[in-house]
Length: 287
Ligand SMILES: Nc1ncnc2c1ncn2[C@@H]1O[C@H](COP(=O)(O)OP(=O)(O)O)[C@@H](O)[C@H]1O
Ligand SMILES: [Mg+2]
Image (cartoon, rainbow, N blue to C red; front, side, top):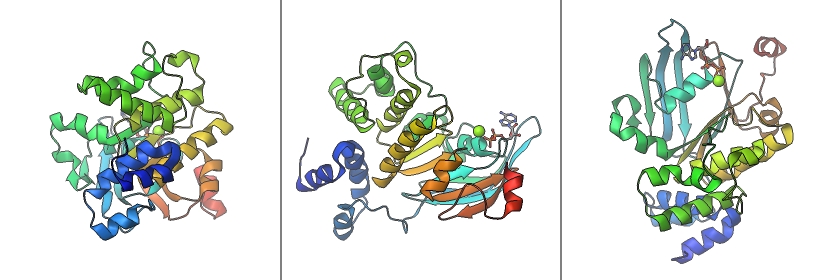
C-alpha cells in the first residue's frame, strides 16, 4: 500500500486514520506546490484556502409558503468545522438539503468547490453526492445488508472492482473502529455503532466534505461524544465538516465555529463559539 516516503510518513502520522489522511492528502497534493507539499506532511488544515462552500443571498420558500431561509450568506473555507445551531424549525435541515442539492434555492446561489449547484446537471448529482459524505440522525442503513455490504453498497452500484471495494471498506471500517463487524447486521449493533457504520459509508468515497444533520440526535451523551470525536479526527485530517446539531454540551466544549440560525436567518457566526449567545436575552429566545 505504501508507495512512497510521503505516504509512509502520512500513514505513520495518522495511525488508524491512514485511509482518510492518505486520500485527503492525495487529493490536496494534486493542487499543491512542492513547498506546500512539505506543509501537508503535518496535515494542518489551511484556513486561508479558497472557500469550499459559499452561500450568496440564498432564500428558500417551500411550496407551502414557509420561508425557511432568508438571505443567507455563508462562506466555509477548506478544512473548517462548522456547527449549525438554532431552535427546531430554524432552517438548519433546509440549509443541509440545499447543500446536497436535494432542494434548490428560490433565490440566490450556492457554490461548492467553485461549482454553482444550480447549474449542476441531474446526471452529475451522484458524483457530487459521493464527493460529499452525508450522515443523518437516523443512520439510514439498509437492514437486510451486512455492515460490509452497507459500506460497500455505493461502490458496488458504481461498478468498482471487488479488490478496490475490499480495500476501501476495510479502511473505512478501521477508521471508525468497526473492523471485525463486517458480517453483522445493523439490527445487532448499538446506536453508536450504527452511526459509525453510516460514517464509514460516507468515508468510503474519500469525501472532501462531511455534512451531518443531527448525527448525535439519537445517541446517549457518552456515545454522542465518541461519535463527535470521530468527526473531529476526520476534520483534523483535512475534511471540511458542516454539522447541524442540538447538542449543547458538545458545542460548548469544542468551541469551534458556530453559525446560529434563527427563523431562517443567520443570527450569529462565531469563530470559536458556544451554543447560546452570551447575552441572556438570546438564550431565552433560543430555548
Ligand atoms: N419539505 C418541506 N415543506 C414545507 N415546509 C418545510 C419543509 N421542510 C421544512 N419545512 C419548514 O421549513 C422551516 C425550517 O425547517 P427545517 O429546515 O427542517 O428546520 P430545522 O432543521 O432547523 O429544525 C420549518 O418551518 C419547517 O416546518
Ligand atoms: Mg432539522
